[in-house]
Structure formats: structure tokens, C-alpha cells
Image (cartoon, rainbow, N blue to C red; front, top):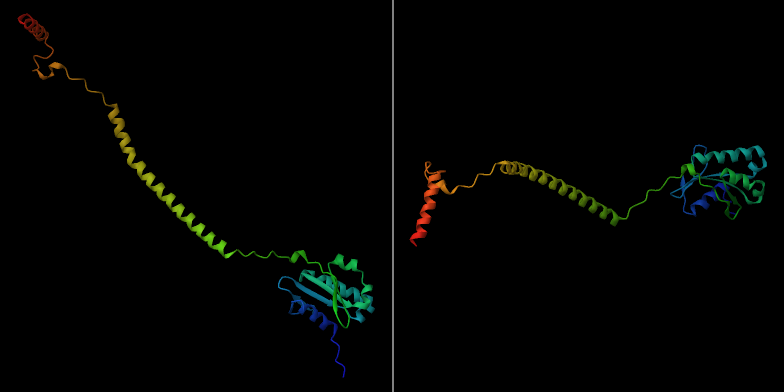
Length: 212
């Protein structure tokens, strides 16, 4: 007894699973959906009946093109023998990829274009050693700030102590100087500034010279 051939949808499923994709729940329209961890891909599989009916073909292509808002990539899959009925340029302009299949294999004929509206920048992970160095640097900066604040407080305290001393120095500088003591400052008041005392003192010195 011959083994039943897998349906086209099953061949497409095996194609993505063999390439590391995981199968997501079908979207609202029932299209199969696959994810590689970064991009989400939808696939519209066309049968021979779809290709025979032009209106059905156009409707299927429009349905596939409309998935660009909910998926990162969208493919159209069809039998290899009838792939020539589809204009590859039209698919490329619509951003649709093309998968062709037969009873033995599935091949990518046209790569699907990634929808730029759904591309999200992946957060870059920082090296653990860089993270530790950054933490150490932050701690050193915090300690440096505390040291600067402490020095500011000590400087303000020092300024407060120096200011009174500056006032005292200015006060001393502004005081008038005392006159030098006169030679007769040690005599009684009635001898001070007495001209006769100077005459007598001079005469006494002259007598001493004569006697000698």
C-alpha cells in the first residue's frame, strides 16, 4: 500500500521546521505562521485550483500582501510547474517571497523582503566585565563627590576663622605709634624740659675737662 503524499501545507511546514523555525499559532486569517526568534513569517499556499481561477489568484496575492502589517515576512507558495504564471517582479514590488514546491522538495525562488515597519532594534547586551567596571567607576565618582563636599565645608569653616583675625590685624595697623621716650623721662615732672638743667649739665661736663 502506497504511503499518502503530504499535503502542500505540510510540506511548507516541514520546510520551515527543518530550518530552525518554530510554528506559531495561525493568524486571524488562518495563515500558517513561523518564527525564527527574530522574524515572524506568514505563508499563503496556493493550490492548482487557486491558479486556475484568476480571481482567486488575485485574492490570494492581496491577502498575502496584507499580512505585511502583522508579520515581518510573507511568502506565497505554489507548485513548481506553474510558478511561471506569476510575475516575479510583481511579487518583489509587493515585498512577497516565492516558495515553489513539488512532491519531493520546497525551494525559495524569491526571498521575502523584511517589513521595515516591524524591525525593532535588538538591545545590545553589555559585557559583564564592563558592567563591573562601570559600577566601580560610579562608586569612585560618588566617593570623589563626597570628598569635594567635605573640602568645601572645611574651607568655609577656615574662612570663618580667618575673618576675625583680619579685623584685628587692620585694627592694630590703624593705631598711632607711641613717641619715643625722651632722655629726661625718668626725672621728676619739674625737671622735665627745664632749660637750666641742660645748661648746668653742659657746665658740669666742661668742669670735668678742666680738672683733667
